[in-house]
Image 1 (cartoon, rainbow over the protein chains, first blue to last red):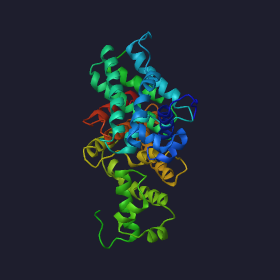
Image 2: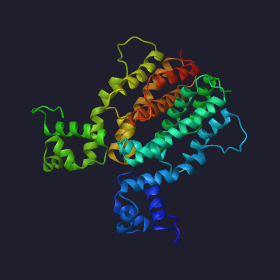
Image 3: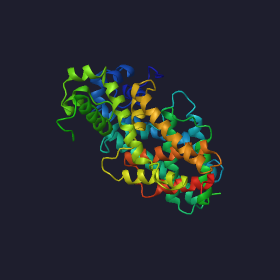
Image 4: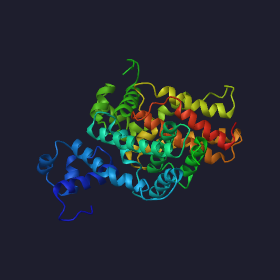
Length: 189
Length: 189
């Protein structure tokens, strides 16, 4: 864990949670989490009601950086088509890292299997935000059916990142190429 | 559990494993598994080396029925295009069930996060089998790049079933429509 001595117990817990839940899954125990964070269980329970709340908070804290890495900034030039393709180029690039395990939000939803879990609520919001971002670009790009295109892009995004994350797929342009076909069909040139 | 008194302890364990791992995830304990199967832990360990082996065997046993439900039988008429679309129509149909939690093989891989786990080996083989089936149909249908099309179809299959399985998507034709676009672009008419 790359945490400094200056990080608060809360920060250390969230850093450890982000790393461990992503790498090992949501079922890792409080013991392992606290040990990795260098925080006592007593301190953890003073800061958070439960392990579930730590997981939810770690996913929430990660969302802005996750989105920023995928989405080209507002200052960037580029057409809506280029901005949509950029997201998939970034996924393909990111998936080459040995640490890549797919989208952390989809993984949390698949693992938790409980829509009412506080971390599921956070994860669903992150995925909705991304679909809305695609929809916005689809509208700007003059897509015939922006909502349909946004949903199609999410199928490809989640399929590509899940398959690459579990080692079923090596993304070598296949996601970008698939998205090009969908953009062409939707009239986003 | 819909098991009859005549089912062997092995069958009852595999039935319970199929249901519980799919519904609750791979981290459910030996205790819960044996209780649901009505089998003692002692009996389980006489039949299987570990819970991991029960999980692997349950995924392996499920594979033929899973494939049969998705893929149109060899006697069926239909062009390669129709047979590919049939798979996605079946996913869309299946995803309407409240018990639907996505593809059990992808879910196991996402949850286990360990390519060497015996159940990951079984799951990967099932996913490879499906990609090969798509590739075979793509070749028969005259796809320009059968391997590319098969990989694209798997992105959509896994994205659609994972998203529907966790409640992010209601498949109302969106997967079938996406596949139509990809088939058109690949020249599979």
